[in-house]
Amino acid sequence: MPHTNAVGLNITAPAAPPTRRALPPRTPVTEPIPVLSARMLLDIDIPAANVSANVSGTGRPSSSANAYYANIGVIEELPFHYDLSGYENLPTTARYHSIQGDPTLEPSVEADAIKAIYNLVFAPVNRVLYDTTYTLIDGYRCPIRSVSEDTHTVKVVLNPNNPDQSTVSHVSRVDYSWEVFVDGYWRKFMLMELKRPGVLAPQEWENAFSGKGGVMGYGEKCRQTVKYAYGFDVCFIGVCDGLSMVILELDPNGKAEWYNPAGANRLLRARGLWVSYENLRRYLYIFMKYALRSYLERSGKAIAA
Image 1 (cartoon, rainbow, N blue to C red):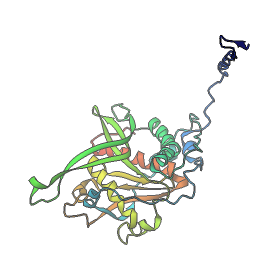
Image 2: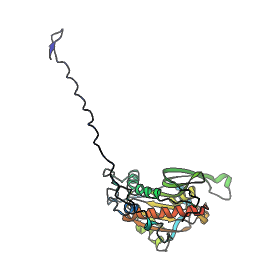
Image 3: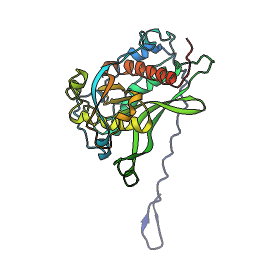
Image 4: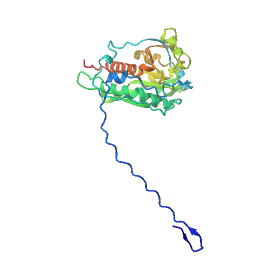
């Protein structure tokens, strides 16, 4: 209410602050019953969201160290198991929910593209692979985990004639990778380099997949992924831009060819596959399961039937 102070000015008392509304009681919600089996989660249409928008990505220059690593040459067919790594025999029990995309993501920058790819593709595949990992004949069930932006450094010699003066460190920071826990340690068995939508161009990989030569254009920057494979000692690698994916198996016995101190002019033979958007989940699961089995067998582990 207004009143007069000592000097005759009318003063209005400040209004009382509004009463803050309390949160309403939580709505009782029962966890929805899962409706998708493992196969259904991999087969269902991947939400389009922004990751499948018509965005034209442009590759950016990467580390000059990549020039010391080989480019991918002729790409032969991947020798998947006759049942596609168990894909045709996945459990039929409904235990998964559908995955929704985030309509606010704008994947014109790599960080947002990575978030979109993880949510729409990697997360559901990780769930299924975690539930269907291999068991060894001694009953040990091999747990897996995924890792973002893992970093590793290796020493390489740039000049074999003067190793003391030409040994340098090459740092690898891979966007995404998978590990299995065996013999008391987490062992990396596969890695993936992620790009913005549109960076993977089919025409740049055409020669390699048709057996006519190496990967061309910006696709030649798969040298970067070969560098990561060398640094982490992993022969199962991939490149994904959210629209397409290339999965590759390098020859683990030919690792000496992955790095060339004289400059990587040679081409590596590899086994691989170009994967279109609608099959990203399906082939990622099949390839990871194949990579996991191959890694375990090469490590001397006997897998239960």
